[in-house]
Amino acid sequence: MNDMDNRGYSQRIIDANLEADGNSLGVLLGRYCISRDIPVADISEYFSVSKMTVYNWFSGRNNPKQSQEERIRDVLTKAGVYDAEITSG
View 1 (cartoon, rainbow, N blue to C red):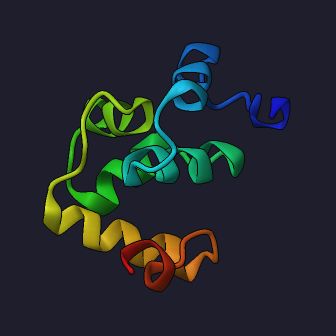
View 2 (cartoon, rainbow, N blue to C red):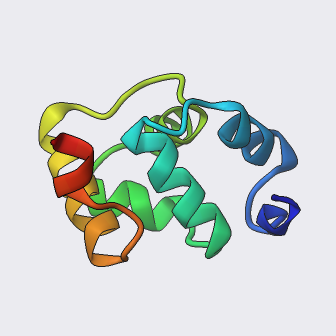
């Protein structure tokens, strides 16, 4: 998955995201954002959290709160990278 080597993200964040548990919604959001070079500032603003919180989600260090997980699921489902019916069932 070397196609995730985007200029907007440090190699450290990319590597941490790739090594993290892909079942975490924060990690999945990170993979989506990194692959599309969506700025962390935009994500932090959208979810009303700090940029450090977003980096921690992306690296799998922390999980989003339940209320944020619902919004993340919605974003990823609309983007076509998450199927809530399969994952929750």
